[in-house]
Image (cartoon, rainbow, N blue to C red; front, side):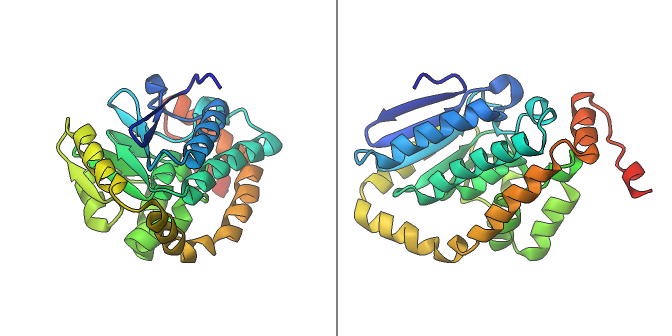
Length: 261
């Protein structure tokens, strides 16, 4: 298919998918998710590809999460479709029979961080910033954040990250076990190439089996994802979500206190 929101290329055993919406910090919308699904399916099925790399265009962000402009207008049913499309993308990354590397250069926030969490490995530049933002806009990271963050950084820290919605440097993320490696700004491509070459020197059969086995425990979380799709989908169009996303677009603080009265 012809791609509008992503760039997709395959070269020397590496399938590269790049979110290409730099004006909105590579936020994903329905169109983006449809294209990611198509490209990830192709990359996963192509036996000539030994590694998949996800990155963001523009040098300012890997991905800032869902496109607030589109999400604000979704109703429960259309919201559920949106969330389910995101889950299908996450599933393809988790079940791809080869390693998937997130190459993070800049902001990695909200649903963008959840995209990072479902990847097998993460390389990030010094300037990169990580965090969850859902509760600040009336949303919840129930498609990877609540499942995988506790397994990487611990339960207490995961709750801090999700409840407080603070931002963390790449170095802080590395110390927590959130990501694998931090590289100097301007050297990400070199680092990605080095890791891809290393992986391509390995047995694809062994890597495939290892990934399935490593994912065994987390795969048992599948019901939490299906429940998350229904719960999160039901919040679309709700007063709290509309207030949070409207406030974001209007660049003001949301008034959530009125929902406690």
